[in-house]
Amino acid sequence: MKRVLAIAMAIMLVVMSLAGCSQPAADTGAEIALITDKGNIDDKSFNQGAWEGVVAFAEAEGISHTYIKPEEASDAGYLAAIDLAVTGGAKVVVTPGFLFEVPIYEAQTKYPDIKFILLDGAPHTADYATFETKENVASIMYAEEQSGYLAGYAAVMDGMKNLGFMGGMAVPAVQAFGYGFLQGAEDAAAEMGMADGSIKAIYHYTGNFEENDTNKATARTMYQEGVEVIFAAGGAVGKSVMSAASEAGAKVIGVDVDQRYDSETVITSATKGLAPSVISVLESIYKTNSWADFGGKTTYFNAANNGVGLPTEVIGEEGADAFDRFSSFDKAAYDELFGKLAAGEVEVIRTIDVADATGYATAEELTSGLGLAKVAVTTR
Image (cartoon, rainbow, N blue to C red; front, side, top):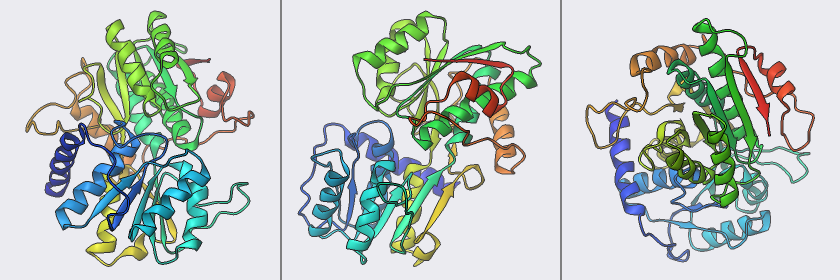
């Protein structure tokens, strides 16, 4: 617990330091380099969570570090950014997100002496014909379905009956968040003895991870139709949803990192231990000589190893209640459910069969694949 609190405080300092930051030079000889995906390191989501882990560890250990935003959001652009980092002296390269799967597949062979930390992905060829994680790559995955489950369960237990889900692109991590969200709502409704169809859920993919007027309009429409809370699982999409929620006096569930600090509308967040997982892998390189625990394989961070969950502490406010934005759902109820997940007593489906190549599931596929009865889901 002391280590978790220490990490939390270190991350809080990083969050405060991000305001107004600009991209540092890539040719400074930095030993640890992070390459961003389409977003920025202050995206309040995946890039920021990973960068906070890099900064917290590197500053504590006195190791030079930098980040690079690729000039082009493509395989070639990401690989060029990796080239730039390595040329600049990087020995460890951190890449947040599935968009780096193909570039890392190439880079792991091109730079056998460089250690790569690939978050939310596994290296493969562009045609998905070949998957290979070499010994210089740590593939880190998260049980997003468990985080989503906790969020959906909490929302329904708190009395909400009209739910919304706005995911970014229908990639495995986002799908898992959404599937878990629906399952959590289903189980909570069943536990409360609610009738079939009592919970209404609108399920939507934006097709991007952007803050824009279209995404805000979509969220606004959902709220106008009676949705009480939207689970925004799409990076900067969340900013659009928060804006709409603020105007509507409605609620939001954040994603990846604790987003309560970004808007009063955020009641909780389905988090992944981005910073702690990055720190764990960096420790294996620099402190414990245990890279073999991660290199050449995929490691899942889940409830059993505290890799996912809802926030249980308010950073910088000792004794504060992280569940204070719920009406009735509290930490005791959360701890009980989390314990069941960690012990394997509750199993959450991560994938279902989806016919459409885009990954967009129909309402029928969601209902049958996830065993929904209490939750009546519609897609748009």
